[in-house]
Length: 273
Image (cartoon, rainbow, N blue to C red; front, side):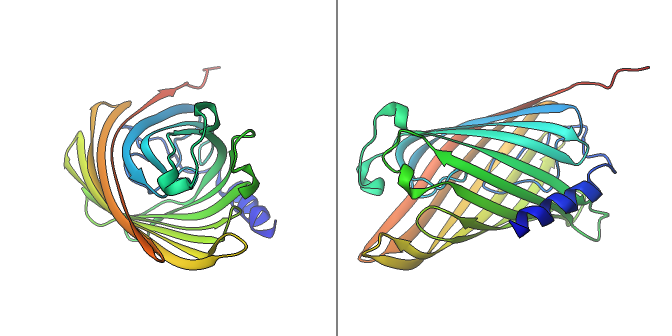
């Protein structure tokens, strides 16, 4: 509760100054890192994508799948440095990871995000953002008893040169079967005015994960790479691939996926007096 109140107060005192809208679209896709910047006032942005592979952790909601996954996000710019997001995930689950199979309509998960930019980069210092998330499993799902997840993240982005950026997210997750620490480290390079390549390291540490009869601590790393192309200033296409591993004794698990995504935005201009 205290963290939520602090998050809200920081945003209130910082949300009304300095523009966040960029000439070309800025998306959270591809990769697992969230941007430290918001979409800007009176902007509606859509981010959708699909992955295929075997994944133990999905960025949006923390569930694993074998087969396919679809995720969609609607980002709504409330004021210049504050936005509200709505997310929905569809997962094709399999019992190799989740220990059970679920009917198709029980594979939906959804959530809300509140994101604010509290400091803009001046070249020497990073952009800093805060992100608060709450997300829910389906109300009919077998694993609803794992509970509602909450995640609080600090978002950092530092330009190294004109075309090179280093970004990082640091997050704490509560709810579900264990408290969790997460981080990302993302290096992206603009290889042309419309194309960007990136490589990213994602890590997650589970504390006391498991059931009441068996709890373990373990670390779960992943490497992600890919590129994005912006054929239009308000439209982006992205491709990514990932490989990782995690160990819960006695069985090590491999983790991989390939994915394709799209982002586009609409800006509603302020009416002139």
